[in-house]
Amino acid sequence: MPEDDRSLSAAEELALARLAMDDGDLAHAAGHVAAALAQAPTLPEVHEILARLAAADGAGGVDLFPLQGQAYVGAVVARAHLLAATGRPAEGLDLLVAATGHAPGTDWAGVPWVTTPELAERLEPERTARILMQVCAAVSDPVPRAGRAALAPYLALARNAVTVHPEHGLLLGAASALARRVGEVDLAIRWAARGVRVEPSKIGEVWLGYAYRSAGRTREALAALGRAVEHEPDDLTVYADLAGTLADNGRLDEALDWIDRALARDPSFDCAVHTAHRLRHQRDGDVAHLVALADFVRDHPDDTHEHGDLAESCRSRPWLGQVTPAIGAVVDALRQAVTDEHVGLGAVRLDSPAPPSATRTAATFAPGLRIEVAGVPDPDPREPRRPVASQLWRHDGTTVVPAVPPPSPEATARLRQLAHPAWPHPPAAYDAAVGLATLELADLLGLLAHPPEVPPTALGRVLGHDPSLWVRCVQVWACLGLLHHRTDEPWAESTRRRVLLDLVWGVEDWVTEAALFALVTAAWVDPAVRPDVARVVTERLADVAAVARTRAVPIALSLAHLALASPALDPETAALAASLAATRPAPRPRSRLRRLWRRLTSR
Image (cartoon, rainbow, N blue to C red):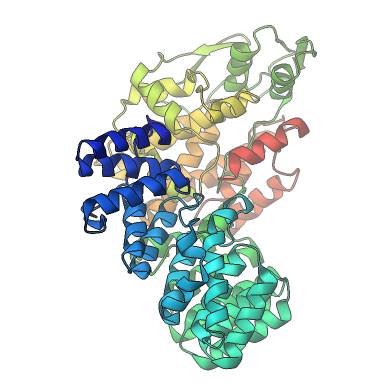
């Protein structure tokens, strides 16, 4: 359903509807009534005008709100009410549920005809059960507290129907499913338990198991799900539910046993495959399980339904689901300067030059912050780690300036719309970056050295508390954009690979991390490039480890986490990465920024 035009208020729409009705233009009046319903679906005046319109039509008014093509939600709801008024309430409920699916937080069904006990008497119990199941399918599980009031009319319908048909197993189970979603867990257990007593079935036991699980009664939940398997041993979704419940309660070995039983019956069953990879990664932390899951998702685009296992496993993990915050004295001073106006800028004293991006970010967002460098250690962090064809930065002593021109306004605008510090998983980040595919190479490089201003959005206001995070977001997405540059070129000789390697082996910088993440992402989405990327990761990490023996390497920890996120890494390199990562935990924002960070990375 497309969005309605809400340029007029509901009262103004009703006034125009009355004028149109006075002129005999019922179709025009219907449009205004639909617009008013979309804004105020329970307003009595709207329903009064709708009833007058139906009476004026002479045929109940249903045909004034046709469902052709993309119908506006207000028209759908108006037709629902008129269907109920003309003796077809089940059809009307179907349309109200469709509106609920379109906007679950709106009280579309909060009208007397839905909550009256007489409606439950008129409907066949199986039809009511199907309607309740449609509601459950249209909303989240569980429904957030703020959205539960809008579903109260459906729960009232469920109560009325159960009162009229207290021995109907399917109705009791569907009512239980709705009650559980809106937080009425005890009621959900009573209804589901009664349902399996009067009509034992697989689905009834599943509903009962879910209700027990929501109440934290794990033993009873597992028993119910086990009985569901006995009813239908070939329904492998229940195996996955059992495994998930066991894993959530720390019984990982038993969970994997259930998954193995499911996979023995059908090795390609999507729910079992997703759950298996997630639980195996949960057990040993090996990213190979998640890569295999991503491969399965790519090779099976027509799964029976969407799964969140890959995103759940990657969420909040360094580079798998989010950029790591920058570390170092310059960044710490910058964050303090922009979040606490009472703290003077002063000076930051360093033993060696900071990464160019850190220095440039401080100069942009805290120009009064002085950076004093005691000296330049060996090997010189201002020099590329290998010969490269092009460089982003030019050094004059300890001063650094961009060596590439700024990006075009179009490139700047496009990246500002896209950049974010979190993503569901690497393949999703790759897909999202396709919006940068048409940018010129010079623009992508320019974005790395000349990050645009923080966007004037809610995201931008949060990122404004940590400018370093915004710069890192820009660099990550610009490098992901490089992955989409001239994709017709074979990987081995491609421009995108050559440029990313230059960035990986250039001076130690945040861009090094962003470029290596792009290569790791390429390995996630294309198995053919995995050996090449694994070799690059191995060599770059070995170089970091060697340099770290003589001086500090600010990007070492982040590169270690990148290596741990990389497919097809050999065991020795994985062990080295784990050793480097274990030297200190993944960087976290300062305490005052942690709440903001959670907001940014919780999507």
